[in-house]
Structure formats: C-alpha cells, structure tokens
Image (cartoon, rainbow, N blue to C red; front, side, top):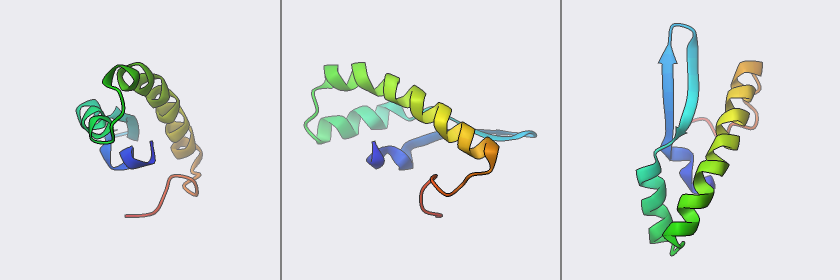
Length: 72
C-alpha cells in the first residue's frame, strides 16, 4: 500500500481538501506488475482504500500531519 501514496485522488473546494481514494486503474496495474493475482487485488484494495481514506481525512481534519508521509 505504501507504493500507492503517489496515486491518491483528492478533492478540493472552498472548505479545504479531502482524500477520496486511489486511482484504481494505477493500483491494479501496479498489482499486476508486482505479480499480485488480479482477483485478490480487486477484492482487497477497495476495503483497504476505505480505511486509508477515513484515516487520512481524520488526520487532516485534526491537523495531524506527522503521519501523512514525507513533504513533497
């Protein structure tokens, strides 16, 4: 999942921004390149994505940027 940090889909508006998920086309291509069974990736990625979205948005709302990853 660490490899997907560059594939985040974001939404921005007047109230700020939010993580809305991963680019699943890129995620599935990456899974394929890594030799992960496509069925397993298709079953697991949405579940993992939902947790990631919730946690990152909670961290951004609280102002806790320490665990969001390196600044770019």
